[in-house]
Image (cartoon, rainbow, N blue to C red; front, side):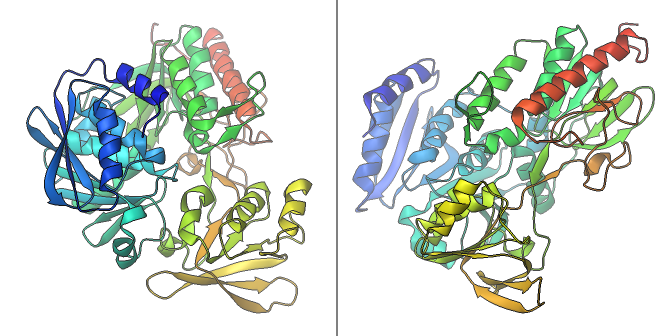
Length: 517
């Protein structure tokens, strides 16, 4: 089932396993049982530390046993596609290998009040699902009363229908939809703390730096590398290294790199950061900043950082419509990723809101699998590139509506049934029936936490000068959350480098006192 190149790679990956693993398979009498067993036997063939045990139990699932202990991770279905990495990493993580949350985040996970039992529904075509699943798998290995079950939905359609799952990943805590859609570990941990509660987290010592950078995307990474190269003690505080880049598929305009993909670029950023003495505090969210000659950053979980210079580089996020019914139906018909959630609407009518490149591209993609696509645009013309507009206009199962404003998402208490939209010319409101609504209306800067610290413009962007300085002494900003035009990866990198050089210049001029003095 697995090709030779994959098998060879797995032999290398599993060469250093220290524990013994058995994959306990329950697949008796299931039509896909042979396929699951074939995949797992192929994986087991790459290491003498891994074996497969076929149990006399009906179903289509397996668990991992480590040195005789059954681990609290259950995988139902066949973890192919993007979820194949989940299977591989589950064994590596169980062996203590791979990229783990650091001690501060592990302390927050251990403080969660158990018992915790989660079920995550995924699709093998979903690019966002593995991150959520793998985060919960790690939490289950860290916490002493935490079980996580992944359900690959292909063979469990009746269950998915009964639970009214219309988007992935969808994470259920009992009968409660705990989470839907893309998320990073820090957001998932926040939701677990809110749902289950948490005990007191062990507080670490206050960390002191010359420069602290909030944000780990292209701008933040570039700033950190430049300040570290200048000998300044530097830390990055980020929810995830790579930031919005992790959600980008193909990148063809990073000069000098004809083609790469977002996750690969994010990995390259992390690798580059690791070449320097930079403290990377990942999976963190700064809750409050105390201003002064030295800035004090307070993070959720009780960690504290002080710094002479502060660079803000938190980027941007998907913009929501902000209309009634939208937030309540995320994961039940309202979606933001056509690649992930599009397959759920095969043969069904959908709506795309937004006429820029992302919206038109989404409409074209969805038209290939959905019965009909209606694209709604607020302006009097589409803003996408001409070649994309022409392609969309040529599709027989696509309708374009201009000068309309989405006013509410309509549902039947269990799923989305359509949207109401008002004509901006005559004011007439109409109901458009659809099973899914894909929101594609751009980005909003992640600047809200800094509104009381630095000046923002009416778009919520941080106002900076030509040197990335804000109106607050010792505070700088770079990347997509600033007033610098054109939100591009290469521009964010340049602005981050500029911010780092500006910080060094201000240290050299004595405007900021370094730790060493």
